[in-house]
Image 1: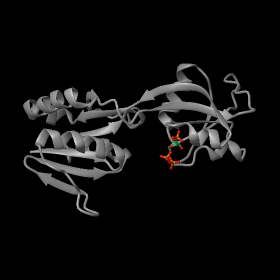
Image 2 (image 1 turned 135 degrees about the vertical axis):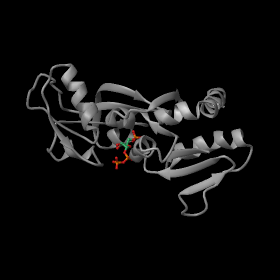
Image 3 (image 1 turned 90 degrees about the vertical axis):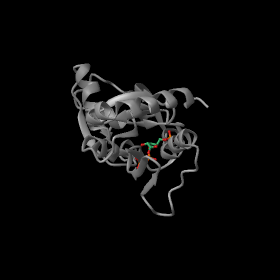
Length: 204
Ligand code: PRP
């Protein structure tokens, strides 16, 4: 039995399409149901940020999650494969007419990615004041609460429509196939078979 944690939304859908080929069946969650079993597999739908904890605690053996979540939570999971979808970037942004001065020790940065932001500025030996938010990050500099933001950028539309520009790219993000360390050893054969299949089907 392999238990699979998937992040609700488009990434779950794209992953299920690969599993459909692997299992040669349609995989559809009924209405509001969060769990689906077929053959030797159980699929569960969880919030994106919760994928690592389900796998860490062994409630799931494997799963799919964005590199942003893995890096932010420093999750001790086996990174099996870059699935090359769910692509976006983590960027620093600030108002169009603002000159971002990284050497300003009072720089206020709003973000939901607190750890990634800390690591980025620590590495540069820069001190910043990090303001942790949970969403609508782009609003913070518009109302004077922050000088800049660190956030995910996919199409760039949210930044553009809120008169923000990208000052720097911190990291390129995509979805990863990951595994619980124990599951990886105990169910190695099945997981490696799956890994091989995913590797050959991610670009289709
Ligand atoms: C994410 C991210 C940006 C937006 C970027 O937010 O935090 O706000 O998407 O996408 P774009 O470059 O294609 O415009 P999300 O929609 O997850 O909502 P949130 O503000 O609640 O985090």
